[in-house]
Length: 392
Image 1: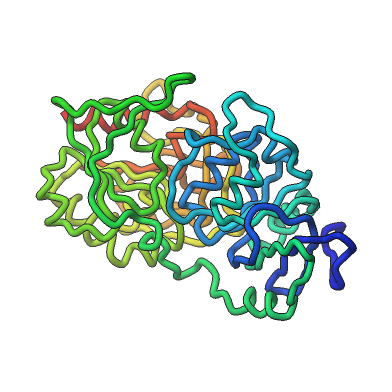
Image 2 (image 1 turned 60 degrees about the vertical axis):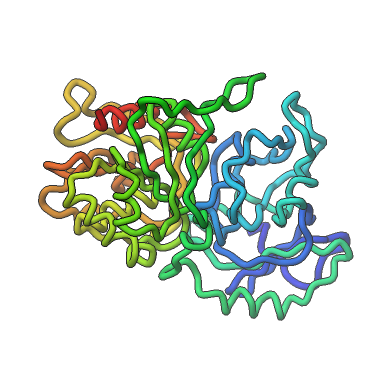
């Protein structure tokens, strides 16, 4: 394959990717200098690279963008999804060009540098994506040095010693440290984000496992007031806030590892019949609490074009309807392990994997995809209204 370059570095190379299997890929570095280790994944979205790179669900990951022109619209402060740890870097095909968008306030290269994220351009991302699809997501180190000098042996050792995402609890690394009353509303062009109104609204306590801000904005838009709490908040602390419902956020890492402390709390909330809504990792946490199992995926689902179909009872005339969704997950709920009383509500039309559940006799449901988009289509905003509608 064209991208399987090797040492020594070609003339002018200032960036390198060193895979745990010894493969070395050269390119042009941009953004922050230094090196970072993680799992290489790919994202098929054509827009929203800034939202992708600030999504905490990408913690300890290096994002390969299949769309070749990344950085061309620059960056701005309104499209940041979180200020905590997220993707450590990105791999792109074309050189980053000058910004060309009226909303841009900073060049992509400068923004990447300020964020501490490493970028490499000039890589055959089509070949790299094909490798991930055939062989699975690899562990690797991404490095940038303006002088083009790299210690390949040291980078290889770091890639080989990194344990990978299985068994890794990353939610504690990206969750906020203290409780916060959420104050932001939805975004409008030219007006920015509105302020939330808290008067006479049902109260949602959102557990932050590595959340995206647009989730909370959509809960507010649907009519809730939101209090966000850290990932390890206890049941007593949650109930002391008198929630009308509890939201389980997205986040990175292995759900089985995060579940060691999250699942007992969720089980207790189910026993108390507190309404629950989970997205992505939160969906996986809900499934584990209900008795299902999760599994590491071969390549994961990441992009803004994933078709998901409504299945099972309860959808009425909309049963079978297909939503085009935004996704970002490398682990999934094993649909074959769903116990009695847990209904599968959505499936992926790409590979048939589970994308939604509802718990019989409880006001509790979850989806594997991201109805808040950012980036992505807006087919699934109705889920926020469905959840808030349960809280009356």
